[in-house]
Length: 358
Image (tube, rainbow, N blue to C red; front, side, top):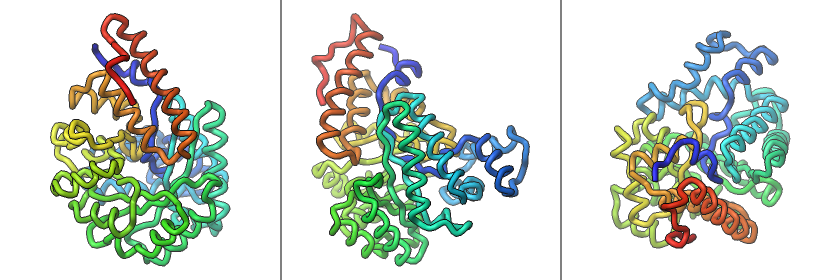
């Protein structure tokens, strides 16, 4: 049963680890810069596109994150934030992403004196309007930044609490792990946990498993963003597996930031076959020049996944979402049947839905 890009594109999918400021269309960057008087290194669309999609030529997280200066420069106005959010929902829906969780840090969008509430309301509206057009559910994850004063994280956590059940699904901590431990932001996560808000933390992407341990034991993370270096501590890996902590994995991004040297060294395949709840995500559609379809196809080819394993990988995404349980359970039933239907159409003589479950 040969898996192709066309087949994966048909399948219902999730994207749980997706940065708003990493998912703009190149033409949108250019047009927003022209509208708002933002100076770019070039006005030539082809050259700008190459600069924005430079993830393929970077080999460190620091270099990779440097590209965000360009996108953030055009995301300081309400109409710009709305357009970017709306277009991201459109792009995700075009490849049959059925549930999209988008993360960003409002504090990075205040150069034009927008207040937090304006920023959050605008992004929620853009995602909602873009998603509802295609029957896709969306939600926001607000990010604290590791390298900033922890007081800012606390303020952002308060914002996440205020918007709980109003479009914000969770709180995250992003940015450089080295020299900026998650435990320094413990007060923010205590507030999050006390108010029954979901949480995820970038950890184990460019620093060792100790970072993952802090995310779990100091911050109470319900999911781990990346978790690539979890394999370096087998005891912690067992804990993550036993407690069914989902890993938000991003293959292309990990290759481009130097988290792994090549795709065959990536631990996703090993984690998946050990039973960890692995999910596949884009991280940054623009910088990494990728889609969820691309990422699943990359995983399928690198780790020789069967249709049954691809189904389980996709189901992991829906199981790990921050949707309310009743909504999640209904969606899981629908997705299970839809994936079986598609695979039975594609492989009428070979696919046996009795061999799969969720």
